[in-house]
Length: 400
Image 1 (spheres, rainbow, N blue to C red):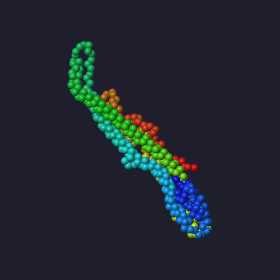
Image 2 (cartoon, rainbow, N blue to C red):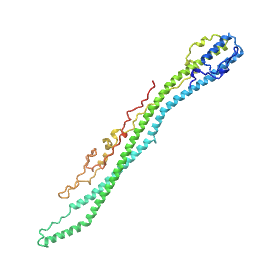
Image 3 (cartoon, rainbow, N blue to C red):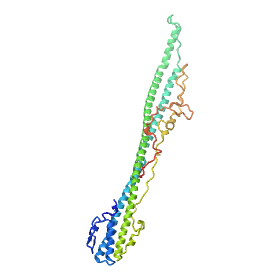
Image 4 (tube, rainbow, N blue to C red):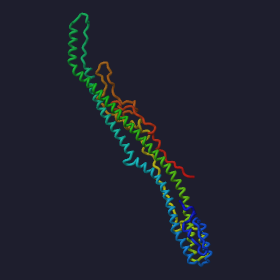
């Protein structure tokens, strides 16, 4: 705290005596009282001061140069420290932000998690594609076998009993089953097993996709939360710093006025010791910065506010078109030659030709005949992941 305009000047004032008059200054003697006392000494001395007066005035000068100057410096240091603490509070917001977004910070961890989950999903879809091709191969084998079946012609009229046509039909069936039974059951089971394996892998990949999208949204939400916390921290701490700065500037003026007042007392004392009774020159106003030491506060500016540039943006989060194009487009562009129109079954359409699906909003860019995108329904982020902080800055309130 400042010296309150030098009220309660110093303990030595209680011991200060004007020897000729046996007058003792009280402990609460203020600057004006001390100034009047020194001027009174000068007037009474008539330019001839004795040893006791010299000792008294010398003691006053020593205490002004030490105790009072030291007290003023301590007040200055205290005010400087309060200002520095307020400025450090602003920079602490930056430190917290840099820690979260910096090397080995939480943001890097979230980025790694997103990358790993995206890689896990892509790898799974690759395995799913392999299972899809395997399923297609086995099921096409069944289709080809069925399409090549020699269909036994039904005999004509059964009313006449057994005849050569029935015998031929039975023999044809025996040959049919003999030729196809073992391989058909094997091929059919292979198709069923491959279909089940593909279905299981697809379910697994759908889970990986959901985890990837969830982690992506979680990262963007955390980015927004930390950007908001940083902005609110800067707003709060900058407001406090501006307030403390204004108060410190006012206190600094008091300190400097006190320093000029102390210089006036020193001037009085030195003239008395020089046996001069005219102290009027000490009344000439001087500026603090012209003195050998003037209590000055150092004002440093704060760092600039850091805008929130880390979010990917609302156009690149699940399930925006650019997001799907970046992460899922390639999944619909893998060639799958085994997946084709089945035309061997007479009168049957069979499985249709595979083409890029349009249901998920991303077309194939290669024009290849490819399997439909295996991507499951996308899981959109909540509004908390939206980039609402990118254009915002701190809004400190300046003191009036």
